[in-house]
Image (tube, rainbow, N blue to C red; front, top):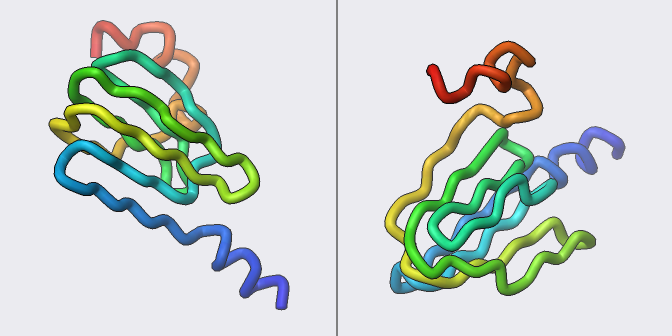
Length: 95
């Protein structure tokens, strides 16, 4: 039973509608929120959303879900900031 609960918590769904509305489940926290870039920490590492006029419309901590609207240009899966070394965080501009 405990194993099934862990598997359910690891699910992630990403729905993009008309490049304007994005819904992401499996969101642990919002790392960065800017009009042209939103960084999320998810159950499968990091997710970077690039675009313009980006807004976090809804963040539901009970369902671990985020709804974002704006002009979405790209989605990029990255290693989570929490898992990067301290050295890399300090010198992130040089890498």
